[in-house]
Image 1 (spheres, rainbow, N blue to C red):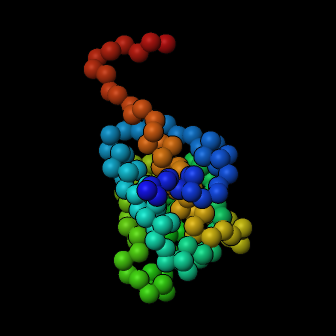
Image 2: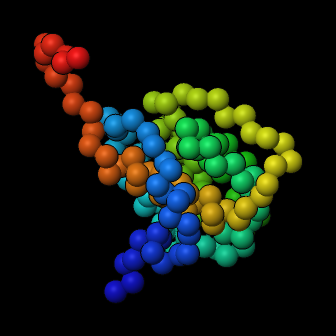
Length: 147
């Protein structure tokens, strides 16, 4: 079966995955992260191709990536690709939900480099997977932290 993760089925630099660092996840981040991975993967597999080839700002800043991705995705004109049910809208909505838990400043360089939307979705998938695979933070009751 062709259930390969995008990491292996598409040729992307592994460095992009390894550099992504973030704090441990909380339980309410689990669902948005799963959803982001699922929808990004589905879009990468199903296209439409014109959408995946669409050029977007190449702005990989690991600390603000979800925030940047939401800004970029929410600005994509869905009707342009003749499909209202493409996952970009869903991903954008889930990112918004996730970003509420991690407010950050999303300013982007004007006239910076560009990349295909495909690359943004792969980065998004890998970032979500990196955070998702970390142990989540546990709240201890009345314990004295060890210094």
